[in-house]
Image (tube, rainbow, N blue to C red; front, side, top):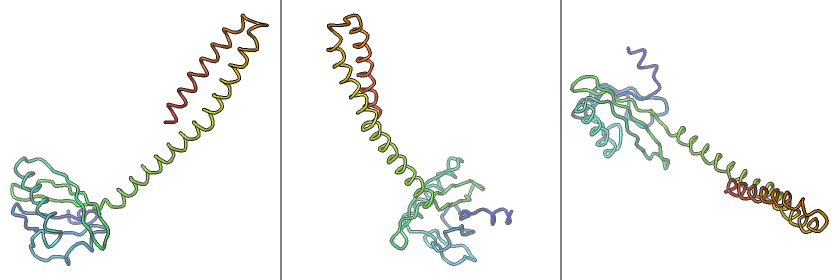
Length: 181
């Protein structure tokens, strides 16, 4: 079990219902957030800010009362940077909870970057639709209107077909404008 726990990259805490940490294993990237490797029991406030420790203790008590595992996210500012963490609580006994804490900072940053890239790409495609296809369709529509005027006298039977094409082009312009937005 110890080998398995040491292989997990998350910080792992065994917390008693009164908020005392009985065991602690720092996780990858979180070593500098904590006290030195504790050899004895210590209060959660030695590991994290008081507000976060109170929040974690509330989740510990809730999981013990409801017998349901809990999860919550929190942030800690360190050296002028905000770090995002995810805590998962699993009940060990009627008085103890195992808490796994993962540093989510890089993942949150990557998710934000992906959303920004996606938004830029959507904007680019919208602009291409508006400037490219939209302008081309508008040009075709104008040419069709001129064609209707020219063929009215010499080929009246073709006018309705050209007007139908013109209506379809107008619908295509509306659709491309909607897609561009």
